[in-house]
Length: 99
Image (cartoon, rainbow, N blue to C red; front, side, top):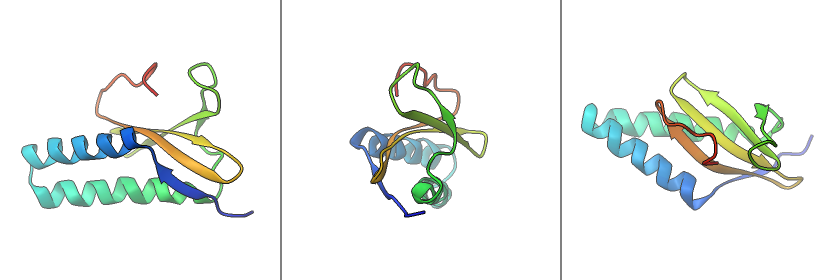
Protein backbone atom coordinates (compact mmCIF):
# COMPACT_ATOMS: atom_id res chain seq x y z
CA UNK A 1 0.00 0.00 0.00
CA UNK A 2 1.44 3.30 -1.08
CA UNK A 3 1.14 6.31 1.22
CA UNK A 4 -0.92 9.26 0.03
CA UNK A 5 -0.04 12.91 0.54
CA UNK A 6 -2.19 14.60 3.18
CA UNK A 7 -3.17 18.20 2.42
CA UNK A 8 -5.31 20.66 4.34
CA UNK A 9 -7.91 22.71 2.50
CA UNK A 10 -7.93 26.42 3.39
CA UNK A 11 -11.19 25.99 5.33
CA UNK A 12 -9.65 23.17 7.39
CA UNK A 13 -6.69 25.42 8.23
CA UNK A 14 -9.14 28.14 9.29
CA UNK A 15 -11.00 25.60 11.42
CA UNK A 16 -7.76 24.65 13.20
CA UNK A 17 -6.97 28.29 13.88
CA UNK A 18 -10.48 28.82 15.30
CA UNK A 19 -10.09 25.74 17.53
CA UNK A 20 -6.72 27.03 18.72
CA UNK A 21 -8.16 30.46 19.55
CA UNK A 22 -11.14 28.92 21.34
CA UNK A 23 -9.02 26.64 23.53
CA UNK A 24 -6.35 29.28 24.15
CA UNK A 25 -9.02 31.66 25.43
CA UNK A 26 -10.61 29.02 27.67
CA UNK A 27 -7.38 27.44 28.93
CA UNK A 28 -4.01 28.68 27.68
CA UNK A 29 -1.97 28.83 24.45
CA UNK A 30 0.23 25.85 25.35
CA UNK A 31 -2.79 23.58 25.86
CA UNK A 32 -4.31 24.80 22.60
CA UNK A 33 -1.06 24.21 20.71
CA UNK A 34 -0.74 20.64 22.01
CA UNK A 35 -4.35 19.89 21.06
CA UNK A 36 -3.89 21.22 17.53
CA UNK A 37 -0.71 19.14 17.21
CA UNK A 38 -2.67 16.00 18.13
CA UNK A 39 -5.41 16.79 15.61
CA UNK A 40 -2.84 17.38 12.86
CA UNK A 41 -1.06 14.14 13.79
CA UNK A 42 -4.36 12.25 13.46
CA UNK A 43 -4.95 13.85 10.06
CA UNK A 44 -1.44 13.09 8.81
CA UNK A 45 -1.93 9.49 9.95
CA UNK A 46 -4.51 9.11 7.20
CA UNK A 47 -1.66 8.80 4.68
CA UNK A 48 -1.85 4.98 4.99
CA UNK A 49 -5.12 3.10 5.13
CA UNK A 50 -6.92 6.26 4.09
CA UNK A 51 -10.27 4.55 3.56
CA UNK A 52 -11.08 4.77 7.26
CA UNK A 53 -14.03 6.54 8.74
CA UNK A 54 -17.62 6.65 7.63
CA UNK A 55 -18.30 7.23 3.96
CA UNK A 56 -20.86 10.04 3.46
CA UNK A 57 -21.59 10.21 -0.25
CA UNK A 58 -25.06 11.47 0.71
CA UNK A 59 -23.44 14.80 1.68
CA UNK A 60 -20.60 14.99 -0.84
CA UNK A 61 -19.08 12.49 -3.23
CA UNK A 62 -16.06 10.68 -1.70
CA UNK A 63 -16.57 12.38 1.68
CA UNK A 64 -15.40 10.50 4.75
CA UNK A 65 -15.90 11.44 8.39
CA UNK A 66 -13.79 10.34 11.34
CA UNK A 67 -13.94 11.34 14.99
CA UNK A 68 -11.08 12.42 17.21
CA UNK A 69 -11.03 12.35 21.02
CA UNK A 70 -14.84 12.64 21.20
CA UNK A 71 -14.69 16.41 20.52
CA UNK A 72 -13.60 16.74 16.90
CA UNK A 73 -15.04 15.57 13.59
CA UNK A 74 -12.62 15.46 10.67
CA UNK A 75 -14.12 15.59 7.18
CA UNK A 76 -11.85 14.42 4.37
CA UNK A 77 -11.81 13.13 0.80
CA UNK A 78 -9.55 10.43 -0.61
CA UNK A 79 -8.25 10.21 -4.16
CA UNK A 80 -5.72 7.78 -5.59
CA UNK A 81 -2.90 10.23 -4.84
CA UNK A 82 -3.90 12.21 -1.76
CA UNK A 83 -6.07 12.78 1.26
CA UNK A 84 -7.59 16.24 1.48
CA UNK A 85 -8.67 17.37 4.93
CA UNK A 86 -11.73 19.45 4.09
CA UNK A 87 -12.98 20.61 7.50
CA UNK A 88 -12.22 20.11 11.18
CA UNK A 89 -15.29 20.60 13.39
CA UNK A 90 -14.91 21.12 17.13
CA UNK A 91 -17.35 20.50 19.94
CA UNK A 92 -20.99 20.35 19.08
CA UNK A 93 -20.76 22.10 15.72
CA UNK A 94 -23.34 20.70 13.31
CA UNK A 95 -21.07 19.52 10.49
CA UNK A 96 -23.67 17.89 8.27
CA UNK A 97 -24.19 19.96 5.18
CA UNK A 98 -21.03 22.02 5.82
CA UNK A 99 -18.38 19.59 4.61
